[in-house]
Image (cartoon, rainbow over all chains, first blue to last red; front, top):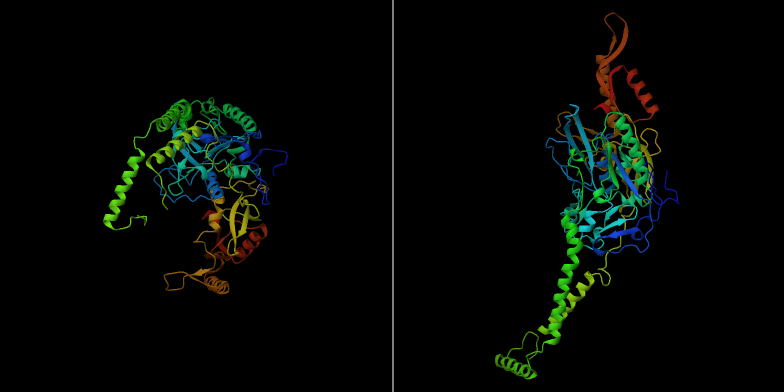
Length: 333
Length: 197
C-alpha cells in the first residue's frame, strides 16, 4: 500500500517504497523547533504524529532491524570481534544507529530466568534534550510529525547533544566530525513509507504508524500480556521528556532499568536546562554590556596623541629609512 | 594586500563586531544563516525494481531488488528489501535477508565455476562446459564402480551411497521437482539443500 494523497503521515511500515519521483512530504515547512535559534516554519503544517512501537515481548533478538538500518542508511560499521556477549557491535556507533541490547534477568518473584532484549536507538522525544543542548543553529530540528532529525550540514561536531540526551544515543563520527543517530527514516517517511527496521522485523515486534494507533496497539498488547501473568506490563512513553515517538511495550514496565539501563524516569539534565534557559541571556547580556562599555570608552575618551606627535614620529621614521638606505617592506620610503 | 588600520581603528571595529554579535545572540535580528531542514534524498527514486526470492533458506522470502546504472553504465544493485506483497514474508526479512545487498556486492562473491585441479594448492576458473563434463565423468565413474543394484536378499534397490548432492533451497516448485527426480533416479541417497549447511 502506498500513501494515499490525502494522508499527511504514513500509517504503516508494511509497504513497498515508490521508485517514481515524488515530492518530499517533510521539509523546512514542517519544522516546529530548531536548535540554537535556527529557522522554524512560520505556519508549520500540523502533520499527524508518527510513532514506532517496540514490543520487547515479541522480540526474538535476531537483529534484522540492525542490518535493515545499515542497508537503508548505507552506513558501514566496522567488523568487530566477539567478546562473549550478544551485543554486536558493543555499543551504538556513528555507523550503527540502532542496537539490540540483551539482559539476563533472574526474576526473584517467579524464579524464572528471563532474557530481556531491547532495541536501543533514538527515542524521538517530544521535548528533545539534544535539541536544547545544541549550540549550532538549525543542526537539530523537530518536525511537526514528531521526528527529531540532525541536519549534518549545520552540525559543528561539538558533541553537546550527546551529553544533552537522556538516553545517551547520538554518537560523534571521528571521520565526518558530525553527530549521527537514527532519523526514524525521515527520508522514507517523507514519501509515505515507514522505517526500514519496522518493515524488516520478522515478528512485527517493531510496528509503525500514527502515535494514536500505536498507543492503541500497545494497549491491546498490554492487556494480552497481563492475561498471561505479566501484571506489570505497560507502555514506556516517558513523560519526563514529554513522551516519545519511539515507545516500548515492556513486561516489567514498573522497572524499565531492567532492560539494559533504560532510564526509569528520563529527564533533560538540569545543566542543559539551566545553561540554555536562564543562564544564556544573562551571560549574553554581560558580554553585550562589556562591548557597550568599550564602545563608550572609545567614543568619550580623548586621544592623548596630538597631530604634532604624529608628525614628529613620521619624521623620525623617515630619517631612519634614509639612514639605512633600504626601502621598507612596502617598497616605499 | 595591506590594509591601513590603526590600533584604534582595529579596536573600534572589533568592539562593533562584538556588540553586533551580542545583539544577534540576544535574539535581535535573525540568527546566522543555517542550511534549511531537509531529509535525505530518497535513494530509490528512478531505480528499477526486480522481484526475486531470497537465496538463503527454504522459507523463500520474496525480495525486491532495486538497481541503477553506475557512472560506467554498469547496472548495480543499490538496495534490496522485503516484498510487502509476497505471501511468505509480507515485507519482513531476517538479518541475513536484510543484508542481501552486501551479499550480492561482496568482493568475495563467487561469479564463475572454480576448480582445484589434482596436485594444485589453489582454485582456478573453469568454463561451465568443462566443469559439467568433469562432473558428469566423475559421477559416471563413481556410479559404475559403487552402485548397489540389489541388497543381500536379492531385492533390487539401485542404491548409490558414495556420492551426494547438494541443491539450492530457494527454487521454484518445478526446479525442485526436477532436481529431486534427477538425483533420486540416479540412486543418490545423500541429498540435501544449503538451507541446512
